[in-house]
Image 1: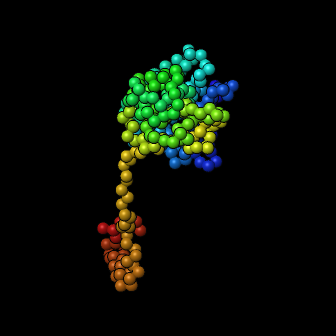
Image 2: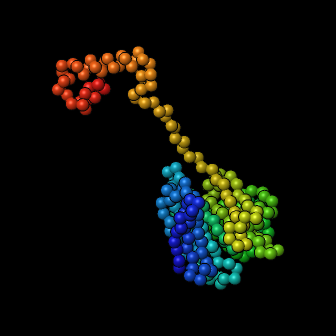
Image 3: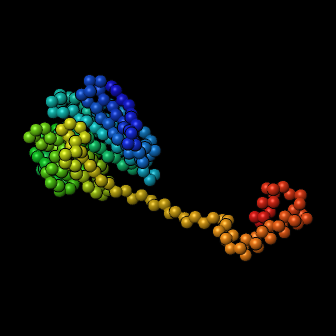
Length: 260
């Protein structure tokens, strides 16, 4: 298993992990402005990467995954989904979770029996691996964000191989965080890896706005621009320095007395 990170020329960091044969692997890009918010990166396997970051005193868990494809043995698929289920179950409920990646299954457009996690806006027909994804989401009270918004077909399809089109990439959040999701869509003709289009989710967080106090210098030096003010101040300083009880003071003690 290979793993590492890379600082990007354009700013930010890429974290990644993969198998030695390069058949499996996942990665995550973090924009420069969020790098300092990252508190932990955990590489669970060549199929699962977890990144934790703090946003406005809240802990966010981002998981990127690559599920075994349809040609893999059923036992391998079961191990992957069971381990991921256990991993997600261990994340405290007061922490936010965003699960995204190539899950290699078709959840289809029919949401009968799964309306709590599937809103019906999807593409194609469900297959066995898609049913496994829905059962996984149901067990963890997750929402498949791709299904929340009505979109054109071009903004639903995440995998294109010749004339074949499907949706295998998904983004999920806990049902309680559904209100934060503003939009999920595919960016047509923007391929992030071969055959896979770019899937984007917009979220809104109620961050606390810091009030910036207007800066007011304690010493209002601009008043010295008035000749009368300047002369009055100069006269006051001269009189103070010449006072008998001040003559034994050093420079610092002089300033301390002047501020009183």
